[in-house]
Image (tube, rainbow, N blue to C red; front, side, top):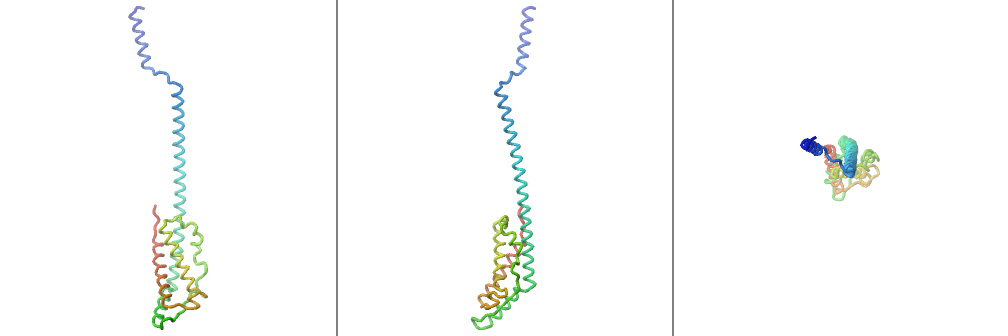
Length: 193
């Protein structure tokens, strides 16, 4: 082999070495492996977290919808019973009669209303807060009005025994109007998605 051929062989070897990547140091391989494992675990963990979060949110959404539907049915039924039994008309007629009498006169009014007329509300009272704040406020107000109205006109209660003045019947009439207005809002409510 002459010197030209040796030079050609050396150049060929150098060209091959330039094309072949240098061996990767051990620490680079370790860092790459660890980084891939950490990133993979993080991605997997985030996937589990978001999947679990979505499942829990779906459960809460279904529970909220169920509670609202049950309360809407009961509110609707209570308003229907009050309309069929003409409670508002009886209160209005009693007020009109009182206004024709001497000041300070009293009129009695009575209606048979069962003690536990709101079993759905009582069963869900601890979960009403799952609904939005405004709706929760309306639901609580509706049932407080219903309880107050019932407590005033049940047999053995204030207006059934002692009777009521013009002022008491005006307050009762206002409470009855609020009962229906708030009840209609509750029944018409749609949950936000």
